[in-house]
Amino acid sequence: MKKRRLAIRSVILVLLAGAVVYTLYANFTKEERAMVTPGDTAPDFVLTDLEGNKHKLSDYKGQGVFLNFWGTWCKPCEKEMPYINNQYAQFKDQGVQVLAVNIGESNLAVGNFAEKYSLDFPVILDKSRQVMNAYGVNPLPATFLIDKDGKVVRYHTGQLTEATVKQYMESIKP
Image (cartoon, rainbow, N blue to C red; front, side, top):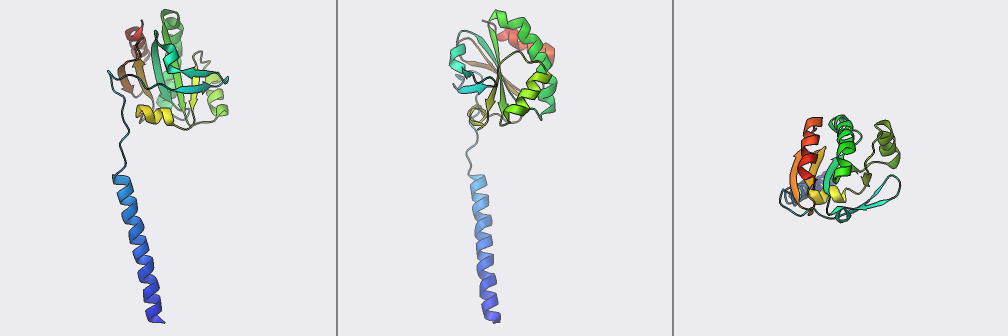
């Protein structure tokens, strides 16, 4: 009886050790996200906005694109949205487009947020996080400035001030 218990415990111990080794191996051999950096061509994507309209990044060629990744739960994102909206009103007729990419949230949560802040620019949904991963975004908020030729000119992570948003939009104006 004691030998049988010892054998069962030994098998369980070997299985647990195998699981720990596999977990460590899987975590340490993961590929790092390929970070999009200034000078790179911005990866193209197609995402849908809250009204069901599709937005393809390459359709905005010829315009500067202020590409912002955000979440409703993100306090710095919440603070910078009114600044982005204010500056969008100033720059939209000068060839600057804002695309606000929400990461993985429901239409209801994003819609309520957009309504609360009266956002005028397209709010698009990346429910599967594929675009976020393609750009190597981590953490939020993250902003990519894309010129009229589709090249990334700047990457900023963290909360933006209104002055910085204005400066960035000015820099990508065609």
